[in-house]
Amino acid sequence: MCKTRLQSRGFTLIEMMTVVTIMTVLVLAAVPNMRSLIANQRAQSAAYDLIADLALARSEAVKRNKDVALNPATSWTGGWTIKTVATGEVVGQRHPLGDGVQVTRSPAGVTYDGSGRLSGATATVRFELFDGYGSYRCISLDPSGQPSTRTRTCP
Image 1 (cartoon, rainbow, N blue to C red):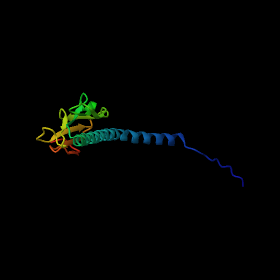
Image 2 (tube, one colour):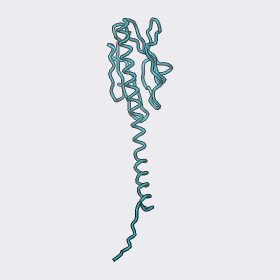
Image 3 (cartoon, rainbow, N blue to C red):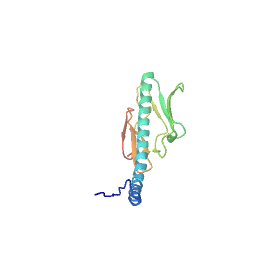
Image 4 (cartoon, rainbow, N blue to C red):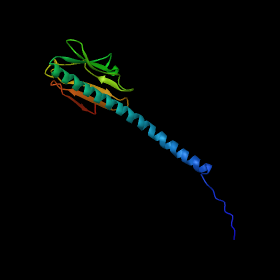
């Protein structure tokens, strides 16, 4: 009663090729969505950085009771600096935004007075960021200097 039985271990070449083909199709379907997700996260991060620096400039103006300005380095996409207007002391600075993030609408600069209000502003000031894949972020500053954000184009 001795039976010889051939046991096979592992995968056949056809099984392995089938799995590789299915994985390739799934990866190719996911890559475009990942690119837009990463671009959207970069734009969101840039918006949060800008809001944080606007809040910093406003609080420094109130703390010092002096005008504090937030101005682009070369362009807003290239980063920005926060300086006191009277002495030019650098309070903070931001490096260039992430790849693909574009600032499509912005003021030339923002200056807060000693009370934390936008200096000389009578209307809402807006920044608009675009991720390159169809998503926009709008950062608005009312004349009181308080920033707010939303995920669509600026009006």
